[in-house]
Image 1 (cartoon, one colour):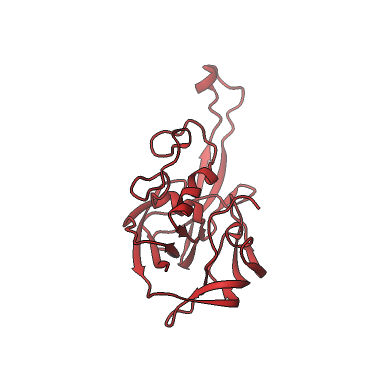
Image 2 (cartoon, helix red, strand yellow):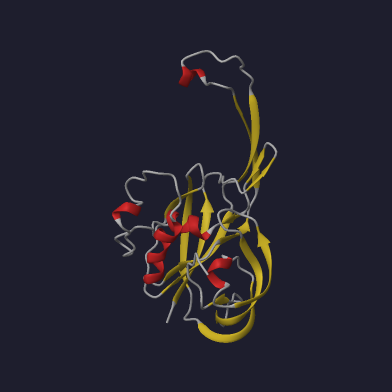
Length: 234
C-alpha cells in the first residue's frame, strides 16, 4: 500500500523562474513543477534513495552540458515507487524587481563597443513567506530534507512533511483539484476535462476530471490518481 505525505513549502527568499515572458516582463507563475521539486528535494541521482544513474548522465557532481535529461534522471524514481506532484500555492504575494544591463562585449572582444545602450527588464517574483503544497507518493517510508533551494536564484525554502492516514482506493469518475503533470496521468487514466497551466518544460493541468483509480481519505477532500508515474513517451 502506498504511503502518502502532504508537504508544505514556505519561502524564505523570493522565488524566480521565468514561466511567462511578456515583452520585458518575466513573470513567475505561483506553481512549482514536479520536475523541479524532484531535483530540489535531492531525489535525483541519489544513493540515499537508490536512484543513481549512469556516469554519463550523472547529476551529482558535474554536468558537462546544460541539456535536460529528465527521462534518464526521473525514471529511477519510478523503479523505487516514488512520485512527487507539482506544488500549488496555498497563499502567496508577488514582488516586482527591475534590473538593468549594458552592452559589455568589450570584456570578451577586448575592444570598446560602438554602442553602450543600457537596457532593462522586470521580473515578477513570488515573495518570501509564500506557501505551497505538494504530495509525495511512495511505496516505502521517506525522510525528506527540511531545507531546499528553488528557482533561478536558488532561493531558500523550508519543507514541512506530514504523513497522511492510510489512503483508501476507489475507481470511477473523480476530480483532482491539485495540479498534475498530464504526461504522468493521461496514458493510464481517461482525462475528461481540465484547466491548463502554461509552464515549461511541460505544461501542467488542474481541476482535472478523469476516470480511473484514485486515492481518497476520510477527513481530507483531496483525491489523487493511483496510476501516476513519470512518463515521457506514449
